[in-house]
Image (cartoon, rainbow, N blue to C red; front, side, top):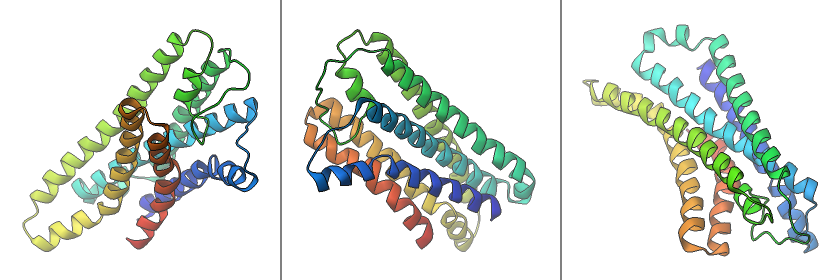
Length: 238
């Protein structure tokens, strides 16, 4: 179980940092009844938000691979998921997330903004910042959607592939007790993945089709505050 707990530790750290980028400022705004944020603070919040959101995404993909090896190749599990590979996967996840965050922040810094902007959100979100720019945002939109497709669809495809192999392996187990035991090892991860991508898609569709800032904000609170707080509880209960 050492690789699984190592990955859970990193996921918990990412979730704590993820919520720490948004919740403290949100609570201060509620307490002081002021909703202002400096430009530098807004860029910093956006950068850390992208960093830890991307890290969450990659960690869930690595954990799906861990469950795939544990169920489909149980006799080789300790050989494949050795400490060196686990550390390398975590390091690569950090590097890719940091590079994406840095790139997006640099792309926003090149834009010019009008003074006294109002963001219809409780955080400095990348798409909102791009829409409020006074200069041309074509290159920003291109980079943003390319990164979203690469870093969003890629990990999701890896998770779906892992679970397709897991389901086929579980289906081949003859006993019902064996099937239950195998499925129970990945039930918590499957629930966390469903919540993560489900709320993420909810944020996208609420902003793309409803054009309501209130519904988009509610979906974003679920995605950025509630889900990361639920993740440790889900794994602890399991």
